[in-house]
Length: 489
Ligand code: NAP
Image (tube, rainbow, N blue to C red; front, side, top):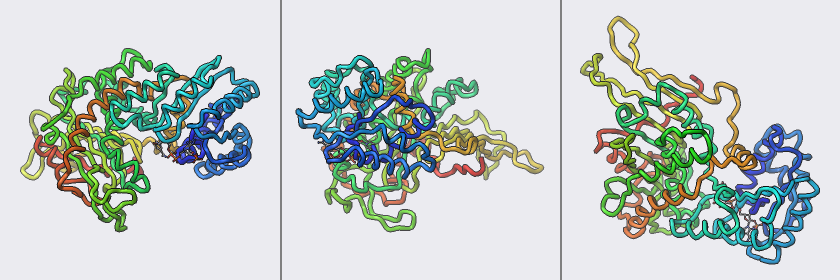
């Protein structure tokens, strides 16, 4: 059952992903989808929309008619208590028509203010009263701060137990984010070095070229800290820093991630200036086109105090990571669209190949999350020629280069995981709560202190100068993000 079935997320991501699962045989013939939204549509009109949405993103759609015939539409305002009984009748009828054995997944692909209401109605009106499994998939944002997240969680938990709740963080569905643990735990050359004795710092960047687009109203209340750091950035940090799990089970992996978040040094009050930088974009040039500053965008306050950029230094106070800064940065209207992790290893004790013009580059392991997917290992090797001198070389591996196919879309993987009951790549409540309590300390201060220097970076750049200084004072610098050439892999 998809709530918000006529919306952007459902059309752009969910239907194409479901179709791919169907085409690959990962979704059996015994399935039915009920689309729920307010606007009146017949089943036929809804099925036409499904076909359009699939065709717009997939070239090969041989089984599209068969696929679309499994979709049914129910026009329903989720705040209207009376309509849930009708929805339940339809669900029961489809359950017997398709032999669904009482298994139900509820996907909430609509505005978060409705999440609690829907969950309560699902229980009160008997939709969760099934003989098979029931699961709730819930989109971000999960709350606005710890308190609202707690309230939402309490509402949801009246109808679903924790292991029935699948909180989406679509970064966790990305191939290269899932690859972090494999790179770490399946390679003898990395795991022994993965600690404060050999790693000098880690840098996690997630930059966007786009501005706030038409999401100004939402973004004004959110900002980059809530929109990106609380969820995606901290999830990547947890995967990078966690201890090897005893087994690859949902519980073991999640509990290791939770331990990292518990060890995250809280940053509060006056310290925030030392550890975090906020920014807001001004007008500028992006890919040759002049673009507006954030304060001139639609639905944005002309004196907005909302950050469109965050850089921060995180410290994990445990035995493995004591003293290793993990720098994160994320922003809109930046120079390039890229999500990338750079692990910088410590310098060797002595450089035999030093000459006044040349210093040795540190070894770097770069994990390219998007848009390219791959790994680069930066080493030093002999410069060709008669003298013995060192020169940097790169070993590249591109995911796409190997099989010529794009890896599955995050939503395809996550939907499949949910159907199989594997919650590993969804966020547990404990992770959500710990992330909010870390972020709340910073947002409380930022909201109450106007940023006098906004706007402080031009669109089309890599963010404010202060973000560079954040690393410079520790003797580091941001590694460039656009240095991966897939064609050469
Ligand atoms: P959207 O395009 O605005 O769609 C909202 C959907 O909810 C529509 O189908 C709308 O249909 C329905 N709706 C609104 N009020 C309703 C009501 N009272 N009763 C029943 N249906 C109602 O939103 P979206 O972009 O798809 O986002 C959905 C959720 O996913 C949000 O939580 C968002 O934060 C999250 N998300 C979206 C994206 C994305 O790429 N779009 C990415 C990450 C997360 P009617 O108008 O016909 O009722």
